[in-house]
Amino acid sequence: MGDNALILGQRLAEWLGHGPQLEEDIASANIALDLIGQARLWLSLAGRLEGGGRDEDALAHGRDQHEFRNCTLVELPNGDYAFTIVRRVLFDAYQRVLLGRLAEGAEGDIAAIAAKSKKEADYHWRHSADWTLRFGDGTEESRRRAQAALDGLWGYTHELFAPDAVDPDAGSLRGPWLELVEPALKEATLVIPADTAFMSAGKRGVHSEHLGYVLAEMQFLQRAYPGARW
Amino acid sequence: MSEKEWPLWEVFIRSKQGLDHKHCGSLHAPDAKMAIQMARDVYTRRSEGVSIWVVPSAAIAASDPDDHESFVEPMADKIYRHPTFYRLPDDLEHM
Image 1 (tube, rainbow over the protein chains, first blue to last red):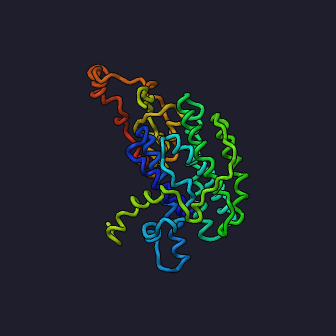
Image 2 (image 1 turned 90 degrees about the vertical axis):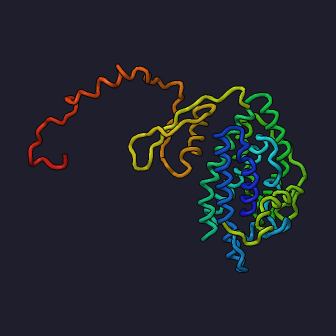
């Protein structure tokens, strides 16, 4: 969860100064910062539980590609703004469902972090679902781009619900996720592509070629000057 | 993207302690709903407020600064319009 938030936060931050409008640029940066804040909480917790003395920074900047457990969806390049937004709508819905479940079902720190992050995710969803509607139900061009984004992204959502050792019950999240995503996409007049057998494997540490570039940029400073502070 | 500029909105924020919405700035947004959302991100990110109003800037009618002489200045020397000439009874406190 920490890696998902960290990598998507980093991707969103790439829009900083390049957003389609000043106001939207700020909104996008806020969301990126929310995600990086969530990543800090999760990674700090992971470091404490590991008990090996690694803090959030060591985990964020000191691990290599295959040690990252983020889903492939979040590491894909931003593409155009429609792609960025449609990826977010799929991911934000997932966050809402998963964080909601953890906030109620988990205990201690995990429940606390989930409850705090859920409030942010609810807002992120509001933002991305609103833009999805505007793109999908907007002009011919915006709809074409949003649909192309959805077609390209849908296959990467399968991984979110693939059971593994960490969450053998991941499949049960798909129902509630679809309940959020389907009406939002339908309202935006977007057509959900047919499910395929495609299955990305970022959660297992097997990433697309794109993650390396994200890490190269994100980790550069700590790699070049280990332990640098300012 | 900006062949058609989004319209301008004036943003009013009510802070936690305040009762009134205060003007805090303006922004561009395609419609009211998004203007509120953007105002949230632009003007309340350091938790400055608990309530947001947005008004299309075009809907605001303003006085003309060039009218200052006739519009504002005549009020300056009408001190009798201030309620400062009443004698307050001595036992009236907290005034």
